[in-house]
Image (cartoon, rainbow, N blue to C red; front, top):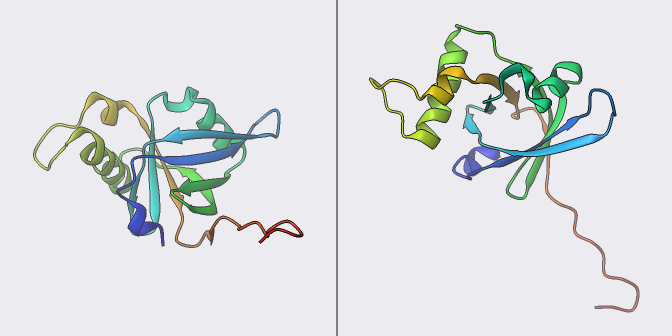
Length: 134
């Protein structure tokens, strides 16, 4: 269901604070392929959201009006998925094309994957009108 939203500019990722236990939401660039959402952390392992994911993999992702609960994982370096995630996001945001060198952002960032194909997808709830209101 998210596939139709792959052209959106950003998604909203909510993690659980590793020390506070409170929800933390960020706006972040993303790529979507075959039911997996890919993110690149320009701050690498030191990014707060990555540190939260390492402690609590359960996340919530919102793209447009769609929201899903899923688990995030750090992609193993030097794998086909690692290269594909970098190319996907660099192509979407930096204009990368096959045969060109990846941007310094894509080369140096830490890739994270979130499988949203099995996540509980939900639409925002509509509020019932208050009593006496149409």
